[in-house]
Image 1 (cartoon, helix red, strand yellow):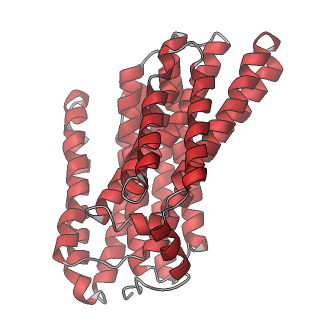
Image 2 (cartoon, one colour; image 1 turned 60 degrees about the vertical axis):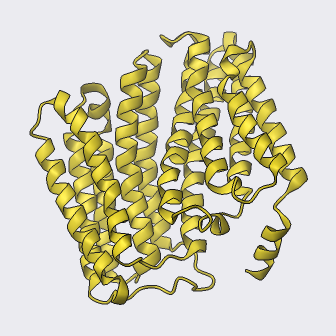
Image 3 (tube, rainbow, N blue to C red; image 1 turned 120 degrees about the vertical axis):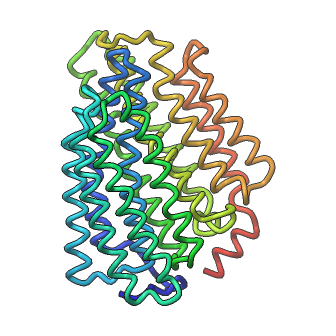
Length: 381
């Protein structure tokens, strides 16, 4: 297992990586459903905190595998087996999402998470044998991840109230491992491959929103009294999801990743993009519940459950990928669009206005397009 060439031409996601992503769809979908139920019941704070904790576990395991794969993917039988072990951990984690939300019981989630992390420890140890200059980094990854897993298991012995506080420190410890490891000898990365992987996962999460749109149509067929509003929600959800796709894929991410201060900032920043995309679909389901009279939230409050995720998604994409390369007009319009969407619930027709605002943002992106420098870079590639 030797490092991959970071400049390898034509590097794309492997079939194993795509298979790996499909398992995460299950965990993401269940997390969004549980967030939807918590918000509908009016448990906003506890629901959001539980969602953030569970989603961190999902995202962090996915991200670590993705960055390891871009550096050391050999696609041999042992690599495949260890990857499948990680996939089994995802399924265990998904099985524990419900108890994490309803009872603050993270034992099953933690068990699945530790399975995933120990499998990646084995991958790092294997990679260390032929990593060359990156060997110190691979060893730090292996030792650091293993130590944090011991802390996770130990934390389960604590009372629930204390565990909720300790979990923040454990998240910070997880985030610190790559920072320390990469400072000892950077592992190689293929910008095209890594950003393609992030783009594919974004598509998966946006697909959850399309499912929410389909659910609105299904509810409309079953509830004649709310037919027009539900059909409107379905249409506008499709429009908003399409706009989010357009905004995310407008900038060339393989160029943007090297413009931020550190590639880790690009990677870490995607937590907010991914979590917001998943939460958007839950917000749409909450809005459907409001229209059909099955939600404890009022209409203005329910609107925030989808406008906040939209605003976070756009704002972070702008910070990570658009702002460093776009013209002043594009930067102003995209940032203003995120802000307008955020305050939409205080306006009488928030959903419709959200779609109008995002359509305007997309229109500006189409009119101005990538900068000349970006076009030249793309031609060179």
